[in-house]
Length: 326
Image (cartoon, rainbow, N blue to C red):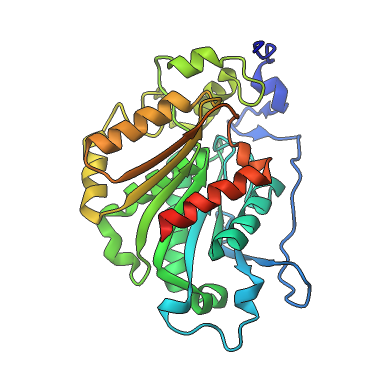
């Protein structure tokens, strides 16, 4: 197979403009999709936006299968309610939104295929808000779900069957939001996190992995793009071996001890055609080595977050997710 052609500097590719105050201007507007809350339409999944924190512009998009909405009366009792998936979008912590079309479509398909209420979280982006800001926003969203009384969640979701899920940077976010809450899970009750689903999670490190070297000029996500994203997202003055980027290098046993105490299980999904592949395999090995229950699915070929662009592959992923959640 021929190598991918060389890719220009990723900052040129995104045409982001660095501002003197440390922020960036993002002139490239990615396609976005508005929510569809009108239950009189014939779409299979309804969605609506709810503001959590207007000062920080944290909000959620809730996805509800129309079949659940049309039940009269709403399903009563935890046994008849749908599981809850709290989802975090990707974008290297610097771009994209819960309204970005590829993530909206993925969440809508997920809600329909799995039969779940999906809460997709809009979190603050770097470099204006460097990590751990996104993790803090994820925790704030979980606390909001616990106490909001939002009808689509309280009436149709079994919050005692909650799973955290994220794609790419969102997978990283799901992991660290979980770590942030692991010592205080009682504060979330009746919401109970049962496990984490990390879809092509975004990790890094100083020393290049084999897949990073092999796929340096990948046409979907070249190595220069991940370097730039970490440069913009990590706290100032640290390198890519910081725990936020490389949880395998620092505090691994401490994190796994927290996970072990709460008994969460993991599903990690990836592919060999992703330059992050070797990092993800190392992450799985770290969890397994510390006694954490992990199901790992790495398919041959493909590319980073292929399920965002191929609905058949997304449906295959959701089949595994549904079995994992059972």
